[in-house]
Image (tube, rainbow, N blue to C red; front, side, top):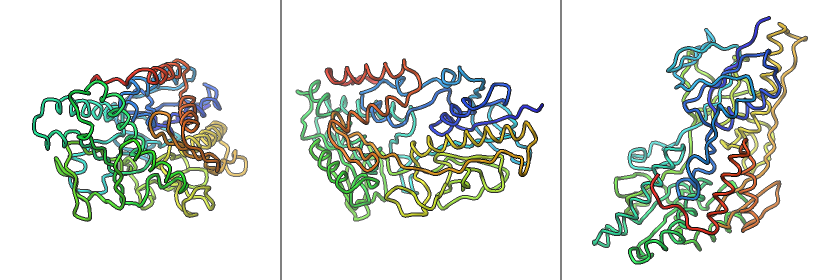
Length: 430
């Protein structure tokens, strides 16, 4: 009997959770499963801002894929994905070709600079582990250099940080940088740095922070950020990033040595021998079973996939594709795993038409949103119930902690977080 080959492209939230759910549904003899990813670890991206600001060590926000896969009969290929040849059912990688019967595309997203001149060249981003380490080292370098600079203008520019984008990433990062400076650096550099020289700017082309939240939580978030010392700039669209300056649409500018771009993401390109149907954001359009149009053997999920349902329980208008969020990818992974398992059994038994096992339909139910606003502060909107302050912060940490698969990782992070309550954050370069 033929043993179907299942290949999963990408090991972010979509790919990793699809693998875990799939291997719980399949017996080892039923299929040969291979994951192709450019690294050998799963990265917990919602905690990257804590790596960038000295709260967590970088190794605590990653989990070995081989460790996750160990209980299951699955293979890992660490390689770059170069092309998908649907005609031959082959994935071409930097390490050779991998054939498939069923393909799961979960290649995720990358930073979207929206064609802004100089943004890619002169901005820091926060999308992967190296980005977080690079940003952390940059902030520490700026602080150290500022202690030796006599010129006040240069010193203020060194300690001036501009974050473009007031979504979850930008807001969480702004709050954590403020805590790092005013709670930690202030203690170690109290005779070297004047707090009046430190400026943390958060800009957005919108009229409020965290647009996905209820207005009351947006207002609360803005209040907390301002209280922490973050300067908010609304209706401020960045139109050009220079080496030491951010220029806005209204002609105003801010002098800075460090610009952090957190204004959005765009799907990772997936080169293929055919052009998949895509939406206006270049996401691959999928049907109710999360299959790619004209390719029933290919499933897509997460940031790369564009799924639209008639009624979505969000503040967005009905008929809009689901947002590019981790919780969407995790929800989609359950259905993809269920449908891949059924497809595997259909292939093994050569079941077709009416005898084939039917595929499940995906229906998304929004669980809620959680955003950290620094130590002891967060906002939460869960099933329509809204909180802010220490309770929301505790819920945020608990929810994210439990999403790690290994107990050893959960314990390490819990220990790091506990230490942070009583001791200053780490200020050493990684």
